[in-house]
Image (tube, rainbow over the protein chains, first blue to last red):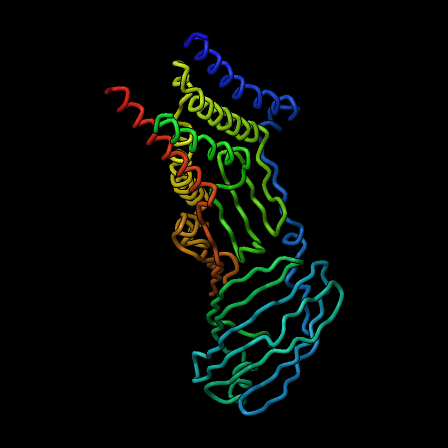
Amino acid sequence: MSENFIVWILRLITIIAIVAPLTFYYFTSGSLSNFIMPVLNPPQEFISFDPNSIHIISINYTATDGKYLLNVKLYNSGNTKVGLNKLNARITVPSSNIDGKIILQAPFILESNEEESVHILFLLEKGSIEELMIILEKGSPVNLSGNITFILNSIEVPFEFLINNFRFPK
Amino acid sequence: MEKFRILYLISGIIFLIISIAGGAWWELIGGEISKPFLYIGFSPFEFKFEILGLEFLKPPPFIMGLFLCERLLAIIGSITIIAGSLLHKKTWSKKFFNLRPFIMPVLFIVLILIGITIIISSVKQYIPIVSEVLPNINDALMPYSSQYLTINLYPILHIDASLKIKILSQFTFRFWMALFSGLLCLSASIIRKKEAKK
């Protein structure tokens, strides 16, 4: 076998390896626009999820030694399964000396058209609960920060958040 | 067998395995590694973009064709290197040697770094809100830099709030093995040229 023959065979194989796949994909795609255009499939979970589909039905709390166990009843009127796996946050009120922690007691998932009781521990580290209630009723701004793991169907989305001057709805 | 042929043989075998196996060379993972909500995997042979475990962007057939070309060229390149290193009695066997295992990973690094820089700056130029909403997107996408993507919510929701999402941008084990194979191939080529001069 001559060197030239080997070189030409290698060149031929290389050209075939480049041309054949492009030709195959061009003819199977049907048209030039299909050949060059990517296909986008946005997940339905994001499209169909509406934050307004989560409703607070009731909030009760029991207090012991600066610890407040909130029992929040939630209802999901949407089609997407949502929940929280983790919530570890801090609440501070810039206009006063109030400082506290919010901790989710147990992960929960709200199925579509179902309600669920969620237990959240609130630890008041500075200030009094009466003062905090007055501030919340007035709609004064609070700062919230922490970690949260949000569940959307079967996927968990963990993130850190920081919200300044947040006003709780009256 | 000469030393350079042994290096070529090892390099060819490693690169052949990597080319056949496929998989990502660079990946961007959003959220937990075991259950990412965002996954982008890219290599000379494939591209994957998934959100919430579902395919978000399917590359066009043109790109799929290019990926297949790349894979075939990598497989052919590896096979010829292996054949060249084994056929040491044939004078024409040296024509089989090539630097594809070295060129591919090096070009890939350049493509990733330049690609991220160019794509992000073009997006920021044409959609200025992107730099307000995602102030550290360059850092977040660059391999081994920031581990968080900050999302500033004020420009879109008018709330003084920001989210930080855990992001991991990294070259994978497959990439490092491809680069290792490339370096072996380059060493073999240098040794071969030195021996030829003697």
